[in-house]
Amino acid sequence: MGTTFHIKYYPVENVISSEQLLAEVNKELQHVNQLMSTYIPDSELSLLNKTPANVEFLLSEENVFLLNESLRIHQISGGAFDVTIGPLVNLWGFGPQGRVTKRPSEEQVNQTLLSIGENAFELTGSKVIKYHDDTYIDFSAIAKGYGVDQIAALIQSHGINSYLVEIGGEIKTSGIKPNGSAWRVAIEKPSTTERQTQLIVELKDMAMATSGDYRNYFEQDGVRFSHTIDATTGQPITHNLASVTVLHESSATADALATAINVMGADTGLVFAEEYNIAAYMLVKSDSGFDAIASSAFQPYLEQPKAAN
Image 1: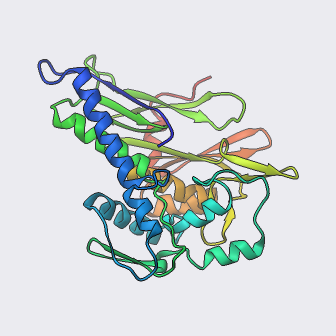
Image 2 (image 1 turned 90 degrees about the vertical axis):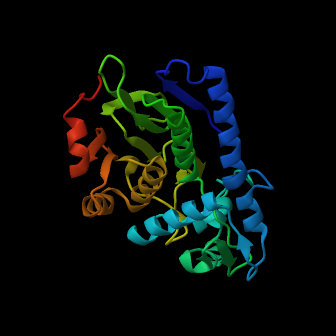
């Protein structure tokens, strides 16, 4: 996944050693990568992406689950979340093919858009058929969260009920600490120059994911092009929403919803969050720094710890 992971837990006596648990965690992460990575040439997802149009491809149970969840969020978000966005991500230089320093032409973008969208493939049971050779499915905005969920389930299977799992900033917590306190997690201020805390929230049996455009981008002629691409236009987002944090029981779902809202922008994103009762916290660029916007479902978390200095 090109990132680090972190696990904190309170062990249950005589259940499993930390060394054994680490070995199982590494094995599970390798399994998830082998299924869902676009950076591993022979991963299941990479093999699907190499499959020609109109040829059936049999997916694993895990990838069927993730593709169905991706389609669900695609539909409720009006296309803001789209796992077929892979060709656009690659075209703009944010995929496994490497960076670009020059923006693609309008003609290139329009041509690429032909192989994008939920009509670019069909999922029937565990069988996928792509309708374009160039259709390329990219789970980058949901698979990391799925990995968190899988590691959490693995830990739970050993009878450990108090833990925090983090992979590349996506988090899932369970239970409380032995002293009765909740897990306290920081939401980062979207600064490109230094790491600062914007807010600390207390989480119990909850996942948290953040999507932002403030670290992964390239510049051309003084214009910054974000790695977050709007699949409906084929262009990087240009609005002033800097980061979105979503809380949900599932880290995979939180991961995807945060991306969807980040694509939408603050105004549309807030309407979406209210409609679907999503706990979302948005930081919007302003002349004075960043303005915070929280959905109704996120409000209870503002009433716990206050913003850090």
